[in-house]
Amino acid sequence: MSYCIRYIDLPCRVNGVTIMDRDGFFNVYINARLDYRCQQKAIQHELMHIARGDFFSEGELEQVELM
Ligand SMILES: [Zn+2]
Image 1 (cartoon, rainbow, N blue to C red):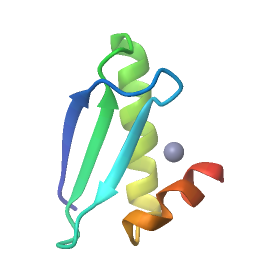
Image 2 (image 1 turned 90 degrees about the vertical axis):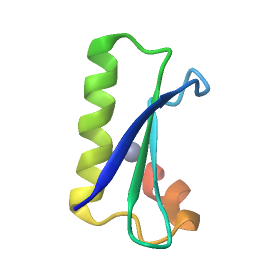
Image 3 (image 1 turned 180 degrees about the vertical axis):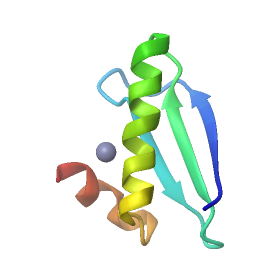
Image 4 (image 1 turned 180 degrees about the horizontal axis):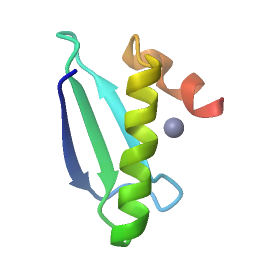
């Protein structure tokens, strides 16, 4: 499983998002505004989605986050 973690400014209510590109590579974006502990939690959360196979297409991301 290959993924890349990047820190970017996201809206405050968003801790992190994961987007799978067409090659099946996961791009994990973590909110740079969070403190270190929250970022670690957000990373764990996104990796959980990846491990569960929640990301089949970019379009399903919103549905996944509602679960
Ligand atoms: Zn999530």
